[in-house]
Length: 231
Ligand SMILES: C[S@@+](CC[C@H](N)C(=O)[O-])C[C@H]1O[C@@H](n2cnc3c(N)ncnc32)[C@H](O)[C@@H]1O
View: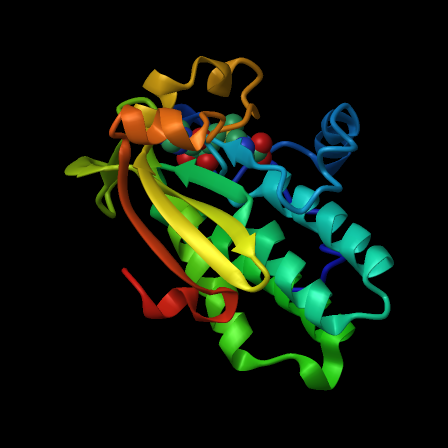
């Protein structure tokens, strides 16, 4: 899939519209809405959650904006570009109840990310970093029910597993910290998170998070090796 994606239909079938309310937002509307938070779309670490993401119309447009800014900013440093491109992909979260949408969203985000990464870093681009990006996308785009906050099976039925989001933070140089939280705890502890649908999901301070006992697990590793720790 090319970064300049072709215009696509807003509806897949009448059944899906009536069963799941599935009507995709047109690119023009997506971009008009993103223009309202244009500066946030430029920062690689500015986090966005699309709670009924479909195949990622908002997330993919945000990713393109973030990567375009990185390309402009890190013309001369492939190393810094690569690190920040991982931060950028780690900042995008989505949930959808339809498994095919989740798979399509993950593929779409990876295709956009990889095309930009490969074009920018050329001979310095590596499969290890591509795997890191894929892993992060797989964790951040979740097949779940945004109303019950539970993961779902392939038929869209709730399982016993809660939706868990990983917070990805570059903590020093090349070290990436992954901290996992249930979506339920994030929404309970963070009143700001749902105000505008794109609030700061992990807005609590580190002390507040630890005092509240809400993080489930934490891993710290090189940003190229996030796929080597945890599932
Ligand atoms: C109106 S579409 C919007 C898709 C995308 N956000 C966009 O703007 O193009 C609604 C999406 O919500 C999903 N959906 C419906 N109920 C859901 C639920 N309880 N939890 C998560 N996703 C749900 C559908 O599968 C569909 O992809």
